[in-house]
Length: 249
Image (cartoon, rainbow, N blue to C red; front, side):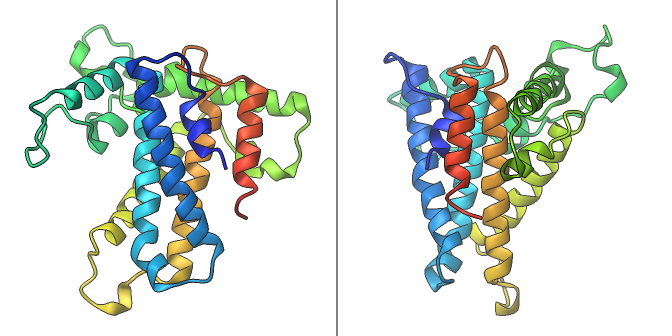
């Protein structure tokens, strides 16, 4: 399976950015592979206990890696910050990576008012799913990815990719990832006060599968962003996607 490479791209010369993405890629592979094992295996107490955790780590690490490939400065800042000798595990960092802020935009500007000259720089969100990142990166990349698949005459095995609509790719992916983050978090923090609401096999496996598909789709489309760091060639990205999708149905 090659989800880490699909999301993080292929490594290059030794530098902070490559070392950081290599680390995130290895983490994605470690937890995604375990999540796939839980998805394909007979349901067990271990899967019920750790399946949601593995899926959420995969989702969070993938989003962090994609933020880093689209906005390397943010990734480099975080890597350098954590490398400082005074890094404290028990102390919250105001500038640390956050789901709300780095993945989801803090503010939602009017869709028809993105380019108003009165917007201050602080309002121009570079979050992974912000309206600006959608306009500049995701929508053109989704259009290019679909054109590439059509040119190759790819068949129904890529139905999840072929179902992408560039006009709502970001909003749809954001909605699905937000719902998955919330659902999987309940399994991570074990927010269950009665046994009847603990995730059963169908609920957990559906969440794991949906998580893996969303991450793989984002990873594939990211390689059609011309300025994304460590992008794979288009055929390599497709091969990595197909290889990963063979791991589960």
